[in-house]
Length: 343
Image 1: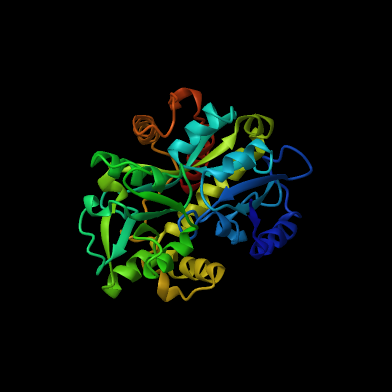
Image 2: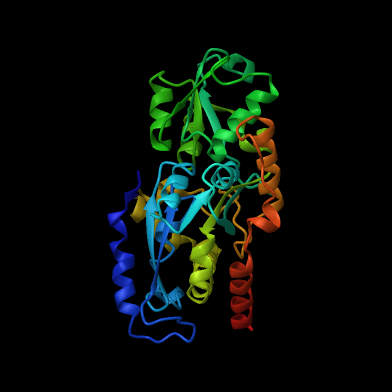
């Protein structure tokens, strides 16, 4: 199930340090604790966004955050159904499954990362350069590593192979493997192809030992790869505090992605990941995923991805995302506050 990250004790300590300052937007004396699911760093950013008190106006006053790590998007459905998290990092298919299968009351509330937008990075699916695999058809009888069945990258894999008339179990075998374990399993010959995230993707390609067989953009076009989804009842019960949260959340993402803060931002992320900043040279460049400047998700792209998933047979039925499963009022209010403060 979920792995609660002890490294986030820093964020908890910051909450205590900030409690002495009053907030004009505080809904109650006790801050609302927001439990947020995430699965990958540095892509999702969630575990580090609340680590700089000078860019957070409301942390520890009207809200606190408890990031909780998962292997992918789909395991977060179970966690939300069990009331273990209030927000989740979902992919499009997972949203449809949460609504149709788990009967969850969920709303798309913010962008996390978008794939293949305006020349930005697209998720890569790698094979060994000496594998003899040069096209999708060469994958017949091979093994593919996927982080979680139903995740955004899993859907892209199936879309690409379905376009070539190839299907799981008949033409190839899908193996669920955590993202960090996919590259060594390809190297050891236990997998033939897998999703490899940045920065590892860039490093492996540069080594000359690996090559890109296809990207998510090749399979599905530009897409809303991952987005923040929230429990609808939680949103309504804590609307005032969550307006504060999203103002800080958007401010934090904007700080991390601002070129003038890049050196410090990369160091914060590198320290969290226990890596050298030199391994994260792709961050916040065109080699990274696109993030909307005000965290407004591409709802149209979410709908298109769900429609593709239904065509692939990954979900028996789709959903109409807008207006039934979207609430952009929080990021819209965050944008209003931030732009008003800049004047």
